Image 1 (tube, rainbow, N blue to C red):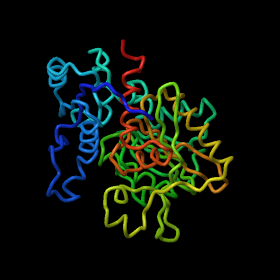
Image 2: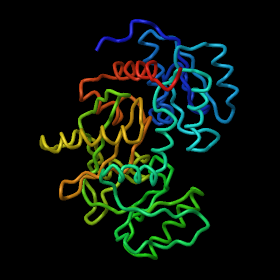
Image 3: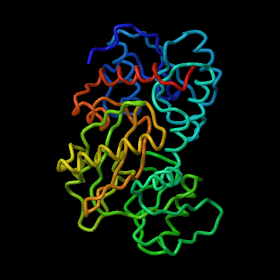
Image 4: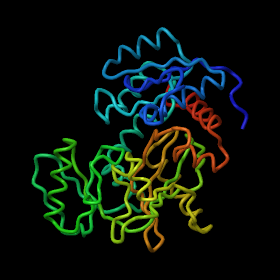
Length: 342
């Protein structure tokens, strides 16, 4: 795909603690990791010839207003995952960009709102007859009582937090006492509602999607744990996601999923239906569980996933023929053409 010939004036919007240095020379991988995505995006956009203006914010939207007035960008490349320490507030920042009539990359406010709430998104998908695990939600301060029809085993996690927050092997529970203990732990750790959903044994498969109306999907990608202990649940725990030594110990790898043509076709169609049902735009990663019977269940939809070079989303799209620079170029084009902004 031919890249944009016009050189854009771009604000890269990110958390104030994640503004990368201009050079990573002499830095170790562990030093780079917290802001690797921000650096990869910024450096690649600059190498593509665009004029990039990094802006870091925490809780002051005035900084965004000042930057928009000063830079007068063609587009804002949005990499925020929270605002004022609240994971749900990123959708409000995108709404603010729309109110300011600023073009931006990534998902629109409605899609972020629907996808962030794991219960609401499941209800919408169930209405569209898309398979999702059965579940129940437990808000803080209320009695924890399992609905009789919600059968064990269950996976207990935060309703709104991402990045496998609060998830460990003990999150998969088989009785009411263990479920109650885990729900209360989520309440203490996050101060957010907990969701207990049907645990489905099987394979963990991801599909990357890029587009607004016309959608492009990646080759399905699979999380594989070569050294998973016998009887342990096949889940992406918080430790597995962030502890590199533990990843090595568990033999964790992500790679193209081996599926037959009918499974591939089914998953591709299902991914596009989900993306549209949740009103997503820009780009997203869809996390599926493939049961031992071969049925796909949507676990979570993740709009604006990590865009680091070499991570799952970019790797999956590259396997589908879209290299990293082309991926960022596509995301820019989608932001420029999105109809939500006048």
